[in-house]
Amino acid sequence: MFKDGAVVKRIYTADEQQQQAESQKAALLSEAESVIQPLERAVRLNMATDEERTRLEAWERYSVLVNRVDTANPEWPQKPE
Image (cartoon, rainbow, N blue to C red; front, side, top):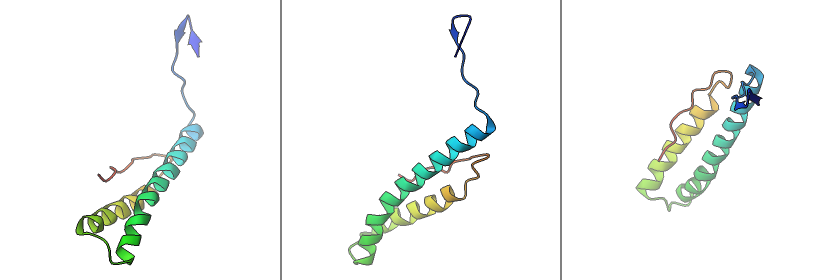
């Protein structure tokens, strides 16, 4: 949007912000699941290293925390390394 030849930052409505947060939440959960699945498989097949077990727990905790985020007022947890 422009005003007097300058770009004016768009202000999103509360509903739009919540929809954006819902999309971000879905993307973060999808990313977490894509990391968790092969780690779970390694554990299930008794092939996981100690590092993989630690990573699995961290990503599962992260997934739970993301799932609990209130998208009306999102505070995103820190992603595991």
